[in-house]
Length: 390
Ligand code: NIG
Ligand code: FE
Image (cartoon, rainbow, N blue to C red; front, side, top):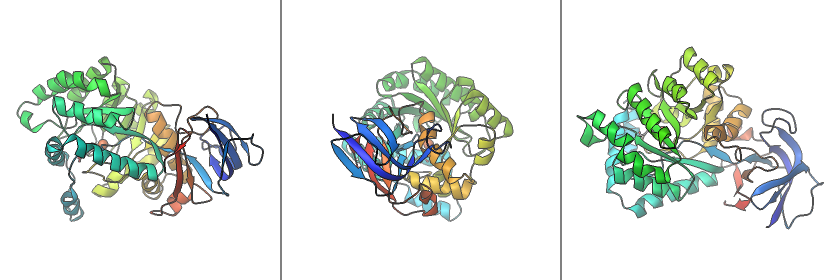
């Protein structure tokens, strides 16, 4: 096993509040750390590290845990740039656009789908993301959803079955029949490659009873639950998330005080996706109210061809700070440790002894620059499990 020393780190974000400045980010200045194999083996002051096989001189730069992007839809074909243009001219976003991507995805070869996922994962990696959740949901047939999950599983362990994205067109007159398919044969063939189940609980997609049935079937089959909740309007998605014990309720664009209390009490992570509000020109979620209620907040891209076609966690951090009034520290925590909580992972989203050695060296003296210098490619070297990826 090769050991690696990263030395002269001007600002090391550990997400361990017992380290460094004692904040949630656990910032250690003039730090060094040692990676042994795939794990962090030692962490301390610059210049006092044990001898290692290899060394990297960070030359005063900031080092952060790799981003954990806990919500993406990368297995698709085609794009919907025309829909985006129409939206920017005033047309609202609606769940129905998903059907256009379903048609293109069904017609695509395995090779084309795999190529798209590889391209997008590459973009994510170069922007500092080291853990990625990927959903199915653009095939909506038994074979097609299984195919999407098998492709996603080549890139990540965090795969999510989203047969309950919208009702497939051929079931337009029989939504109950489609829910039976999603909770029956489609689920059965999805479980081989899925860790999670998700459902889009929204007008135009699935109501509370249908969403509950879909998540409960997934849980009974051994999957963890997550949900698209309260995205386009206030609604029952958050309530369903809390009832079934979902790991995360994602979007949370429209929450009531009761929703926020329920999320905090149930320990359900609220995953905010500010790229969606940016790309659909919608009001942003009330991150401050969620944080002040004690809800754990994650940030993710939601990369998909409809509501938000960005792969950039740094952009999401900048939007969270500028548009949702999160502090730079809160935004970075949510994009790393928050994402790990949303995936119920304790080995990633932090840099402490024993955690997986996932990190990004920034071309900046502080993580604050991620929001302070929006749109600037500040992510330098990226490592996952101790191996350099970018
Ligand atoms: O998370 N809300 C549902 N699904 C995606 C959008 C899918 C699409 O428009 O293609 C989302 O925003
Ligand atoms: Fe989504």
